[in-house]
Amino acid sequence: MEYTIQSSRLTLTAATKGALLQAIRFVDGRELLWDGKPEIWANRAPVCFPWCGNIKDNWYEQDGVRRKVSTRHGFARDVEHTLEAQSDSEMIFRMDHEGDEVWPWAFTFRTTHKVEGGKAFTVCTAVNRSDKAMPVQFGFHPAFRCPFVEGSAVEEYAVRFAAGRVIPMTRDVFDNDSIAFEGGGDWARLEHVPSGKYIEVNNKGWFTTLLWSKPGIPGFVCIEPWDGYVSDAHDLLERPGAKLLLPGESRSWTLEMTFCL
Image 1 (spheres, rainbow, N blue to C red):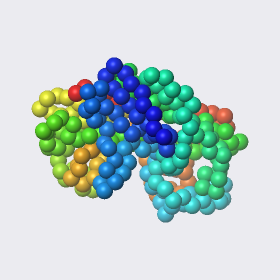
Image 2: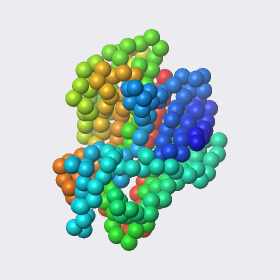
Image 3: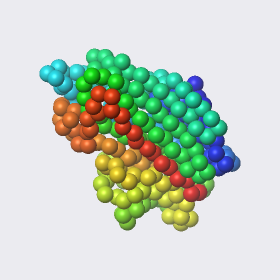
């Protein structure tokens, strides 16, 4: 199932599977989010939880027990969520994990999407419902259209960080997969350089920010604030940026997107 909310400038659609964004559009119909062409990359804006990236050799060890995993970026994005509430400009989804062989901790995960003028927000909150501390990483993975100005070419775009660094979007920039940055400042913008139009992601306070696309940039660029990173560790707490949620404790992460097009 898919649900849609709207502001004066934007419409936003999300699905119950993963509570994930499916589309962000201006009210005039201009698409801002990648449309998930399966022959290129079927995702649009996955969420990484309760870990980010791959776990080496597809297993981790907890309390002396080796646990096998079969997915990257966790599993919250792969399961059905329930719509709890919806208004004209906001909707809230919920999933409850009761613990299993892959992830023995019980937790509740809520996702709130909202739109305000030319801004869209996604807020994810995890609550540890188990009786043991739960290690977590978290990451947003939104894919924005590139090019997003009609008639423009990929080479006219760059990602600009608030701290001053600029990454030109050349066709080979992602030939070796993603690029990770720390200390980029308060935001990162996918910018159409000739016009100054941009899509901005607030990345203040995140552990790292990744840029990623398929080689050749076939229609999208991801700007990904992550609270964590990959490593060779099989102890989840040794993975960079990992946090412990104590029993009953909650933690929230916010993706703030501004569209100045």
